Structures are given as C-alpha cells and as structure tokens.
Image (cartoon, rainbow, N blue to C red; front, side):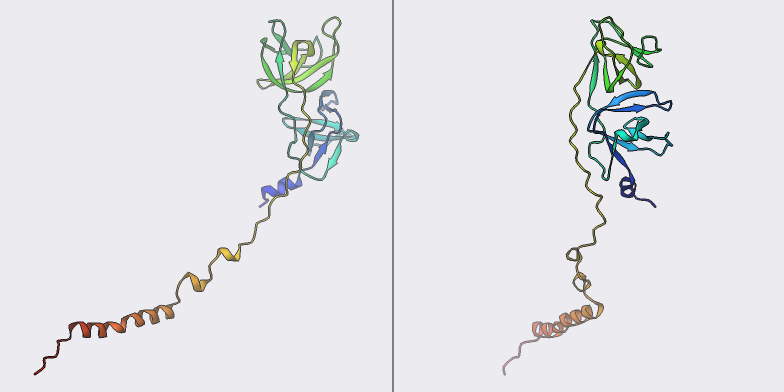
Length: 217
C-alpha cells in the first residue's frame, strides 16, 4: 500500500519566477499567473516545449522555459486570497467566456459582487480610452473574464517561499517507554514464593493469639 507521505514526496513543483501565462489545450492564453507561486506537474501529455500543470483548480500548459523545477514541496503553492469586486457605477458586470467584447456572456454579476481573481490577460479594448486588461475570475463557481474598468482587484501579495518539512518516518519505540518484563509483573515462581512467605507466619500468629495462658499451680 502506498503511503500518503510517499505520494507527497513524488509530487513535482515548478516555481514561476515571473508572471507566467497558462494556456489551454488549444494553446490559447487563459491568464497570467502571479510571480513567486508554484505549479504542480500533471501527467497529461504536453506539446513540445510545454509542460502540463495544475494551478489550484486550474489545469493547462505553460512554456517549459518560463518556469523552474524545484526539488521540494512548497508550503504556499498557489495564490488564493486575491479578490475582485464589481464596481460599475451601480450597473451589473458581464462575465464572458473570453476576453472579447463579442464573447458569450456566461453570467451577469450585480454591482458589488465579488469572487476570486486568478490573474490578468490581454483582450479587447471595451471602452474608449481604455486598455486591454481583462481579469480571469471565479464568481460563484463560474470562471470567466471581466473587463478591468468594471472591477477592483486586490494587489497580489508576495509569496513567502518555504519548504514543507520532510515527512516524519515512523520513530522507533523509546526503550524508556516500555517497562521491562521483569518489572511489569512477577513471574509465576516468584509469586508462589511470595505467597508461601506470607502464609508461613500465619500458624505461629494464630498459635500465640489463641494459646491458653498457662496457670501457675
């Protein structure tokens, strides 16, 4: 049976030294993932020059040259705290399938709604004078894109890179924790001798207790 510690030891992680683009199966960009966080190697076959990875609840491919393999398991693997909030002058915000103004609307988020933000990506300019930033987000379990001008996004905190300690091997029993057999209880022979030793004085005690006093004549 394979232990959990063995499975954890076998995992392979890659550090993202800079913002790293995660691609889908068609090698279309999904999002730029944050600097200083990690990707878990997946067993899915990847195209040449790419590796298949998992980033928390996302799967995809990254360019092999963009990441660095590490020989440890990091404590903080993925960024999960960055949130977005819809701020659109009281108007709802469209969550779209891709970063395009003509893309399918997956759901409409009310003003003030919030959720998780994975990262940004370049897309269409949605408003005059705007830029190309879109955010890839998760709103109530639906992942999609929202235009930057319609949301506020938290700053991404720097990752504190720490290595998980190696799994503890089973420690041998401390001899001091186990009493020697001799101390745990008497042997059969010792017990018999002890009982006999206790019983021998009894007749003498009874004799002296119930002995009739000698009457002087």
